[in-house]
Length: 239
Image (cartoon, rainbow, N blue to C red; front, side, top):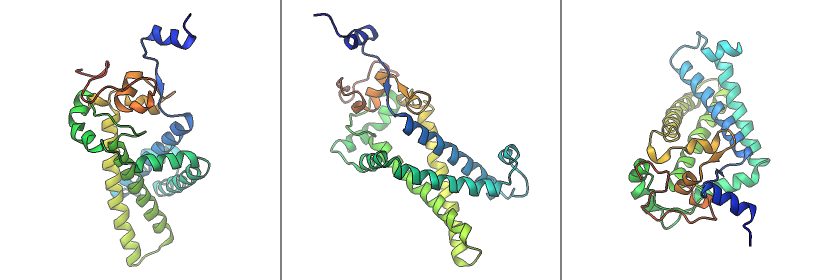
């Protein structure tokens, strides 16, 4: 019996057809959020450094004061979050459910993470997100939520002890969010060999090499068994 076209393709590519990890809507939401957070942090740190009277590069580009840019982007992120939770309610529920999941093998994954980050030999997990991503999701959502929430509060207050408290909260949350963003960029940059290629999941057409998907998110490749714990996939650095 002749092979089906799909089987022929698999044989011709050696089972290495790319995997679309995230759909277009998810990639668009991630891109819009990333852009908004980048502008929010850039203008926020600029203002915090006492340069309110000196326009930043972003201010010059759009011909608006940094304070107005900062405020407008903050409100834009509020609207974006609202759209994500209404028009994208199914995706939002999946995000919450998968972020909150706890599996028996999570502790094993964390114990092996240092080795996995350097060699690609991660312990297997069964979630849409690996256990580290689940924690990162919580940290990003909480810190960004506090930054935006305290920022909204500051726009409605004109002084007093509550205003002073919100300023401190806003600044502490900004520092925390900045640290998390830097850590995220470290991971997606590929400086940690185990995460090389991960950036492709959210860029362009979202196509990730099949071996990369099997290494990081075995559930994304349901038609093939993931590597056993401690085994390096074919494209694993040093494996």
